[in-house]
Image 1 (cartoon, rainbow, N blue to C red):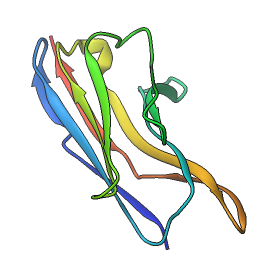
Image 2 (cartoon, helix red, strand yellow):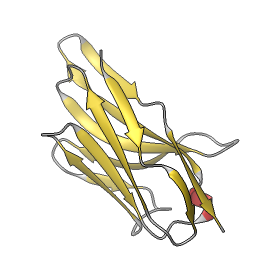
Image 3 (cartoon, rainbow, N blue to C red):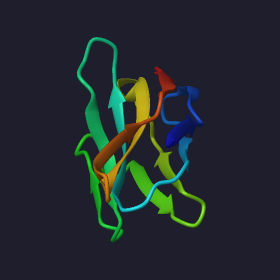
Image 4 (spheres, one colour):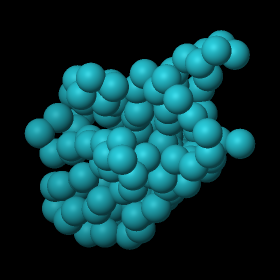
Length: 119
C-alpha cells in the first residue's frame, strides 16, 4: 500500500523558512509527477509546486522566487524549501504523486502538515 507522509511543518515568523519533506513508501512505479498543494482555511486546495519525472518544475506565481521543490528518487522523497514566508502562506500543505502503472492511473495524497506564519 502506498503511503505519503509529510513532515517539517510548524509555526514560523514572517520572513522565516521551513523545509517540508514527503516520504513515499510502498510499491510505486511509473511516477509522472510529485507535487505540493496547500489549502488555507475556507479556501480551495491549490497547487504550490510540482516536479515531473524529467525534472521540470512548475511553481505557483504566489510563491515563485521563494519556494523550491526538489526530489530524490533514490530515497523516494520530495521536498519543498520555503523561504521568505508570509502570513498568507499559512495553510495545510499536502504531498501528492500521480502516475501510471499496469493497473491504470493513480493519484495519492498525504495527510498534510500545518504551516503557520505569524506576522
